[in-house]
Image (tube, rainbow, N blue to C red; front, side, top):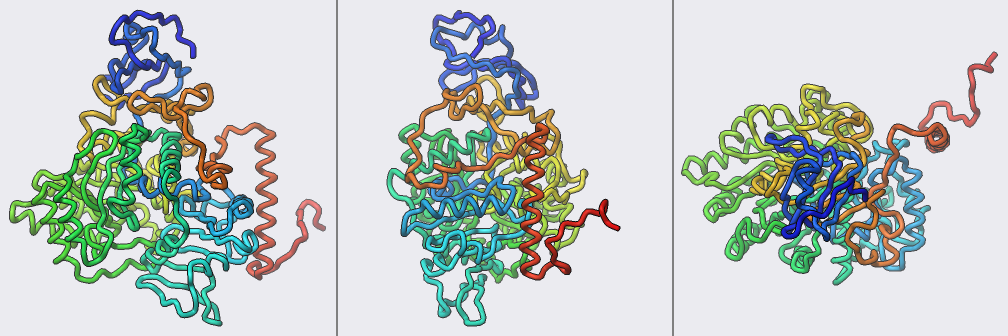
Length: 625
């Protein structure tokens, strides 16, 4: 890239990498703006301008011209199921970013044709019916038509899964299969499963069925994880806090990232949590883990951050917003044992808590332990999600030294939430401003991959605009945040949640060299285009881990996607959407596609007698008599 007259001056301690000619938002109040940055041994050595970095350019320094683009600190997703997502990434057909169901079904049909016998086609999260022009889910009949002989599993949020007849058979679902607790197997008049599974409200029926599909083994797990991390780097992510989750066993499912870390092959920094998987033995699991590890074990690439996002299964309030809030049984006794055990041994935790009713019960336990002088005992702890948390609960959280982590789940479930709880509740779901006004640390994340997409710019768009993926405005201006605050929630706050605010989250000399050069200026693009931003150059620890456009070829090489029939090998991951500044020809083309898809959808409704006057006749009022 052009070096603009910079010459080799350094004879020793030269920078490994210099990025110059950038509009740098440092996040550092002491120097908020800069034009150039120098990096050595994975750490930032200089933040300034060309004159500042010039003395650090040596004969082996790689100098990259940002061409006047916006640079930001690397993004940190404060709630991402990155370990589980990596183990499955290359097996999944992603509908993230797909704008029409027609396109999604075409992708599914093509993938089914190349998927070998014994394997499934699975669409697992990252999309919502509201993002489609058709505003609907696929039908079982459509899945049967697209893939008559290949099992197909399509997951929609925490609400439902749709299976074709081959998948129903492969999953072993019959008329004798009982409904699991909190879930429903929809059946026809003959008693046979139709292919619809409903979370009512527990999503375990969805995930236990998905768990019956074939999994990756050996080196393929490493390859899948590396490609998933590269996909996250594509959007400027340099760190993530793994929130554990169901069907993520420790240590088995963690071994892949551990091996990659040992080999120096992680391209994303991961702080992980441990989640007891078996109801009834949670205390035993926690006690066993406490004996062998403690939070902050590891290094800046891979480190333990505590327990959660569940401590006991009975305290989990599943959030299918299409269903009523779950009524939880008494769980406080075992929950208190778990919290006391963690506090006594220096373990922090995070808690999945959607509803204020659950949060109030949890807080009562914490306050009881605090009265004994044992909470929080210097340990970091936080609530995740908290869509309906009350002002009183926020006051109690602040008094107990807690923090918050919010995710854009309502980007994808906002319409269901609005329908059930009304516009008043939706306007404050979650109450971002109230959290920040109390001085709480509020990290932001996505909760990907099984609900929201892993693309952090969709979450940043939601934070700033209050809009869903279907472009419905839920949160009014008084409960939105400005762009700088939203970015800080994805950088500085995430670092604080792992106790790393002194080494990352801002671009400052002595901090870890994690940064992203963006495709568009986040601070200048129209609000609706925030969701379309990607990174063109992502650097983690001074390593270029993603490069596109003018920088293509600078990134580290990855092994080929394996297996060769993987959906990722053919479609990639997130399906990017063009920015709003379209050429006239492209705009006309897209309008034509929209008209065609609209007519197809009308015909679909007419065939199902959903339109009162189905007609294929085109009506133009200009030619009426």
